[in-house]
Length: 311
Image 1 (cartoon, helix red, strand yellow):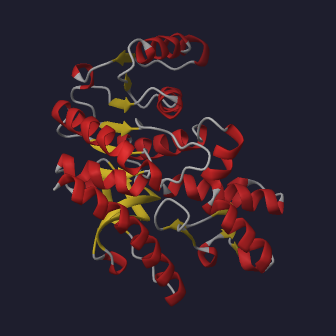
Image 2: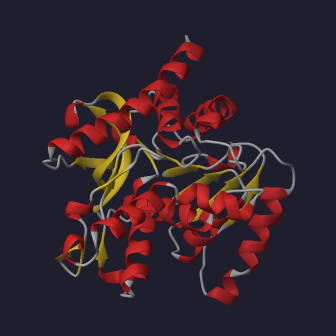
């Protein structure tokens, strides 16, 4: 039996998730959206690209969750996008209801699925999906670190004019301005960044990474990033569906790791058929630990608002 992947939300992020997943032939795809005709039209259009691009999967569009039944992975992208001048935090209450409803319906149709949350503010929305689904923590994952690391790697490669394939970058913490790019553990072909890039330039790259989403929002004016976020979510889905056991930075529910309990925070995770199969605890410096705890504190503020709403 072929794998089945559901993408909730047929906007820019969701549609591109379907594109990347189809090109990788990860399985049959269901695109769900409340807007009548949009998922059906995009699904059919993408299906018709198969003979040209050489992929052979079934792609279905729907406005309800019946066709999503028994999905192996559900990627939730639905929600309101950031607008210029809007922080991820401003999105909190607007997207809370969207994620709550999407999770309830997805879980009812696919009680054994792994959920990947993409909607912002990411860590808080992952917490909503976790609380609503009542799934074990291994089966609710936030997509953040893959994207943040990709941005960090991109800027490093641009700075040094080297292949991005040679760049290894580690980013932890919440998805937002308080994320923690670990310069000490990042390198180019094994060469530490500190030996290649002056401290002032490194700080500028770290700052640009932390504000990577806002920079794109500024350019687009009426929307937010979608190609890289979609590609990042699909890399996570691929590792799960193909049991590749890739070690990727993901927003995971911590139960004491790094001294953090009861919150979704970005940490290195092994992703396989069971979702998160291992959380790696890296030995951090005091400064890095303080930055990570500051980042988790920002996540906690949002989660406290959500919990008061759910009470």
